[in-house]
Image (cartoon, rainbow, N blue to C red; front, side, top):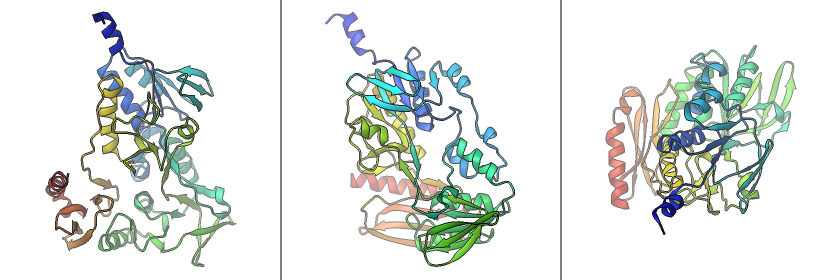
Length: 396
């Protein structure tokens, strides 16, 4: 093979088409452009295409930020800055993997390499009565509708006592709304926190006026004047003017399944984020990696770094370092590192001046996870993280 032929063979297949304009989609487009100034990049999105921080949606109210304020860049500005094409309001209806062609609401489009960064959608529980009254906030358009619905509202019921539900409870209650959290757990964030930490978080939010209906769920929503009458599974009846659903997200798999890609809870990918179909990759909230979903910024950022290299002809495996998750509850600052799946052990909790620290040790006594609640406890973050990283290396 002559030098010219080798250079042609080494060129990445173009265009690189990215489906999704969230952190994963735009982050990958930016990484690709930085490394390959001439690469043809297209981003397809059903949304407006504005750049915004999705984690900020659950804390924007207390900051006084409108939907317009959360949008930091228009799609036109992004196109000009990165030299890419963005197709907004574009629904991808079908992938023809053999022909490497997309069928979209805007017409057909060929691709050289395809990346599914299609994200995840709110889980919708089967609720009797006026189920359509349930409001979810998962993107900028949702947040705009949420802010409009808050006009004239006093009482807000939040369905879901997990991380997002607690963040919204803090945000709403600190702005004077009467908040009730409805959840299945015995304490807030039961899947992530030991009981002592969960109870401390519950007490801190209660100090803002948050009320709790735990170990139950919402069964029925009925109109009641200008608000709603909520019947819970335990028979309790409460009133609300607005009902916010925060019971979790489910990866968007419809397009991948129709294309014949291997899916479990998410789109299954290998270490290089390639799906079961060569030339098609997946990134972000929609992917499943070794049986796990990793819908957090740190693993997505690592995926962006590795996948950009792979798409440009340098196959690179993504490695996921341990990364604590910060829970945005200012009334009780909280960060946590969940123990590895299947790791058996026990929690040990110690009180601090403004919270507590909780360490999860396996049966060999090694630190495998932690919860740091309060500003004093979080001063230990780097030390505890290093201990967990050392343990991970020894186990590996």
